Image (cartoon, rainbow over all chains, first blue to last red; front, side):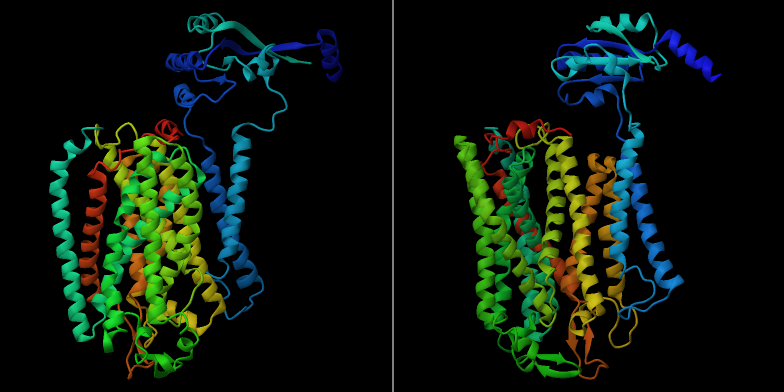
Length: 193
Length: 437
């Protein structure tokens, strides 16, 4: 079985997987208007690549609020409870010890512990939640295969509609992007060696 | 904007008159309270007066600090909001005037001069361990007499208000002059004033909190106290600013902020509210935590009388106020303001800032009102003042009166043609108008 796959790889060398279709625009206004029309058309899985921040583009694309705060809250609550459990277990359950005349367990004297763990875990939640939602770490991305993707760091604005989009169509989508004023419609292919 | 004055004058003249009548009634009522309290030796009207004045003072101080912070950070989003604050600090001299009756009693009160601050009258009874002695025999006062004496106290009070009024006069002048000639050097001067003004105002508000509130129980001390007052003032000032901006946003055309006050401004102000909610809790808890951990009697009594009846050891009414502050002034606004929609939807934000203002008043009440009344027959030699008492109605009367006076002063500044509704020639004004998240 393994030999077969090796043979296949050797004979075909590369295999392309279609990722999506790109269209470039030459100004922030053009891509802003185009983004609104793409959203109205009902596309869901698509992305804009711009050399500068275009304010209001998120709303125009219909991108909602980030979900990262949920992970932050979850992390914070976990940290707070972990701190309480830690103090209760060590000071009131496993090895009860009177320190400075304070109770074995109370929400007051060990509050700095709860508080620090809340912050630490909330920060973890934020960082790893962001990684999770962005699917990071990711060593490569298909759009880098676009021959002129570097231009989006210079003077071009690019829209990429992914093949995963339920509305994606091999024939209609390029025509639609062209009708919005998109130039150099390109099919992005990710090659698998 | 040129029609600004003619448009709003007839209507605001009516409100202005009503506010002035309210101020006269409220302050007059409070003064009657002070007079009767002075006659009978009852300190309730004095505590109420201090509470009523301090509420508005804290808001004005918070606004002053906000302006200087905006200035020194040269923030691009703030000019639209800053102008409203500049009207707000017009109330300083009038609030200062309201503290004069207390100073008069300190100077000319005779046997009752120590009715509010017991250390003023050296013959006032006080506690040392379980014995009742006079203030002048109390070593805790003797060691502090270089600071806590009537002369230095009066000089300090005058200095605090000189700093507050001077800074507010100067910052207003700088900002309003720029409306006329558009010279960017006014902005530079404003930053310089703020650079010097922040430490000056910080010292004034810190020692002001020490003198006005902490010295009510002169044996007690907390180095956190000034920061607590700052944090409280910032929360209250942000709440009032948000209310004012929400109101002005509903008014289009002259004098209104419709189209100028963006969702992003509101979001940023609400984020600051959230930040200072956390900061207030951090400071208040730290103060409690350090005193709780150190467990020194001359510090712990201050918290004890806010929790239990010292003679019976039973939970007192103050316990519920304390719990109310923990949950109502911290946990609820904190959790509420975490949510994005609660910050950007006007009605939702209005609810929580009004809530914060009510609890800010309660926080000041909790700091000012509880105190030890020397009662010779009592088990510990004193009794703690209760939550309910004549200080509440007298305080509310003063709160109303000084509030009307402050609002009148602010409205006078707002409706005069001293300034445009926003700083139209501020170098940052375009960025502020187009501010977005």
